[in-house]
Length: 67
Image (cartoon, rainbow, N blue to C red; front, side, top):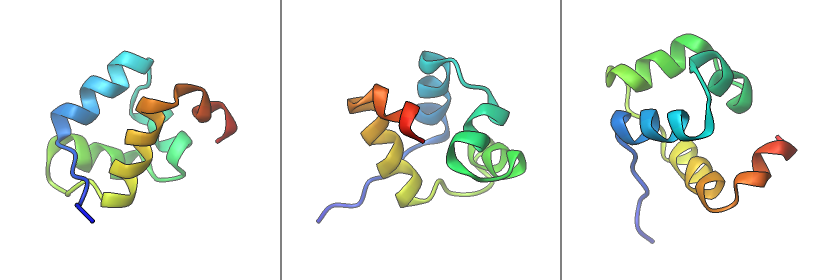
């Protein structure tokens, strides 16, 4: 099973694509805005679980409405 990784730039690009800011992503994922900020600046690695979920949202964008 391969690990899914996501770079801060990939996360930023996806957020722009779907129209989410840091606060919106934090609300969607149930994390703090500070946590999202750390991911975006690269000071903390984006967790694999988060990368998997966002990969799922990329494939099935309507699934975000269920969150």
